Image (cartoon, rainbow, N blue to C red; front, side, top):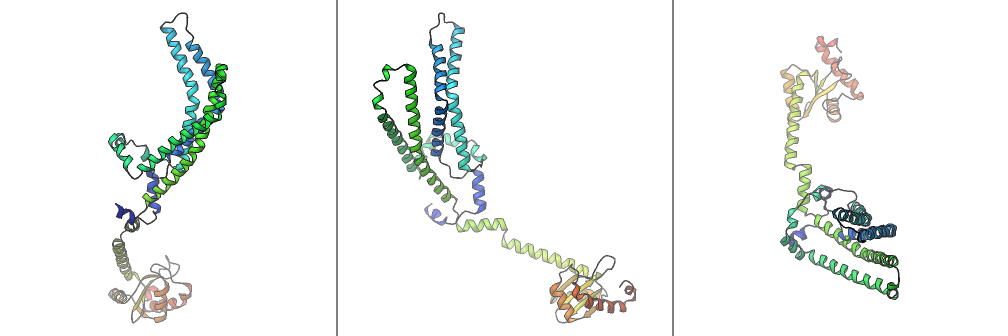
Length: 355
């Protein structure tokens, strides 16, 4: 395993990153979610805390005042009131936690929703596997984070408790509502201090998660080559396909030679077949060309089909170098090709009128 890790030193390709993004394999810190929850709850309690507490107190007071006659209907009413009071108190906090978690998730994932993460994985419910994960390479890190969070809770409690130590003795002389408001303010303060201290743990955890994710995405040189081969195609296969395409192109080109009006040659190694149908073409067109063995084959087909062969070294070379098969001749060669065609048509009076 160590050797495999040392071999993975190449940066991940765009394709590898795209696949990882679809699978949800990105840096996500659970500690940032905890921080977001603390901040959301603090904001919710600060904004709506007092009205919620007063409403809850009023409801619970009505519930727990002993009625003159307690029957099934009265008990049902009490339970409904208790449930309503609990809902009034818990709903803002629950909503804040959900909104904070969703926003933090969108921030960390940059808006990407990985459906693979939503699929249930029942192996995570196995307690043996869950216990074994503690001893994996991330186990010490997770244990360290847990210890830091416990220490943070202890430090926060000490700080908050020491700040209000002079106020505790006089609480017993205050009305219940003021006592609850004091407790509420202490809770808010503890949440605020806890969120600030947890932020440092969360940022450190995110940096570690980002490092671990980037490391897991590293690729070996062989993997990069294999991915390139898959995306571009096997070189041997591509070479074979090119050969087949060229062979088909040569076959079609040779099949067009019998339709030529003339074959212009450099007698040593070049042959260019030209066709001109005035009704269909605005200018003469090269329908076949070749050098070496291919040039000889073009001449053989021309002789077999009675196509005139005209030797003209400058024109043959210019056509061979500058005009592709299927293209019309350039304007600068009009005069030279016209003279060749005129000569050919003088030999074949049937085509003279067409020219």
